[in-house]
Length: 134
Image (tube, rainbow, N blue to C red; front, side):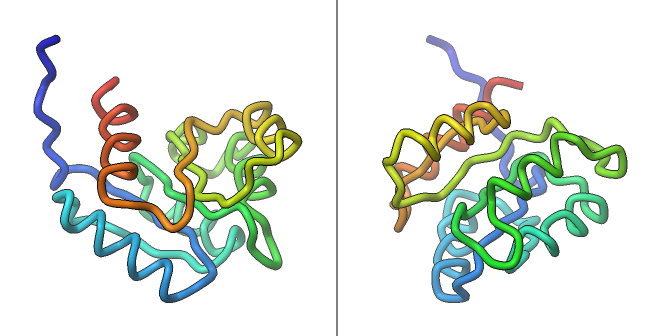
């Protein structure tokens, strides 16, 4: 299979994670993959603002956050008329394997899952699949 090389540096990524250490780790991994334009948000509310402000090509988002969870954020994003791209691919970071949460996320239009804490290879593989499919 002949895969087109992904030019990571030209993609805008939004990382939504309420734990600063985990968020820094994800941003570092994305930097190692080759992304240069990474925006951070610490909950689903600020993430919505950042979606409107930076128009990310991909969103990596935690599910468990307060006051606005990843599921609530995804629902708002998909229904948004303000976000430039309400269909932007969203990857959920989760330690949930409960089928109820997975089902809810799928119904809302999530594009993939990565188990927390994410490894370089797991995150890269998921991101490549989503960005390579453009």
